[in-house]
Length: 197
Image (cartoon, rainbow, N blue to C red):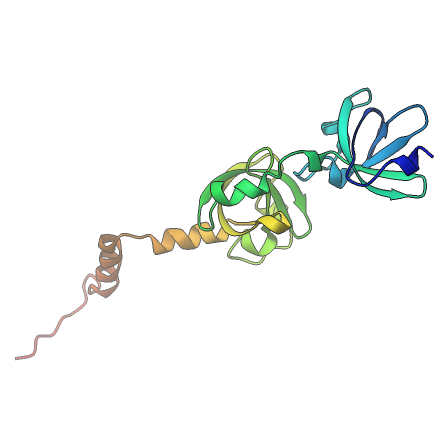
């Protein structure tokens, strides 16, 4: 009967009674308990729910699904989606400082700020073919990356180290380029030069 009185979209308040690898359990009253899945705790990527929520916390959450006696809750949906502002703050082509959060088989997850995390794909880490991101990066590293894509609706942001090097090549001054050409074209020391009359 109590569950029948609840509707999807309702905002409820409760106490965190348990934190597990896949989320947190919220006690709504003496009889009702709901689950906030790890993906609904916050907008940023989370490896361990215990990093952001603990037993005894009083939280507000939104009901997002009711399946028989199971109540699914979301905390993040009551917070503004930071990705809406990501397009104002970050631009494709921008060079940003990022911190390596986690090495994955396909690349590395990079924290740009508390809410926005990006992915540097394996193919964007080096000009040479590498088998593992740990050949280039390690967790905790802070370094520059170039933003190569932003998809706010998908909460995805692509980063590259390789594009930084390419940018460096493109940004040589005309004087540097001319100096390089002159160096390449200049006759080798000791080489004979013929003058036609």
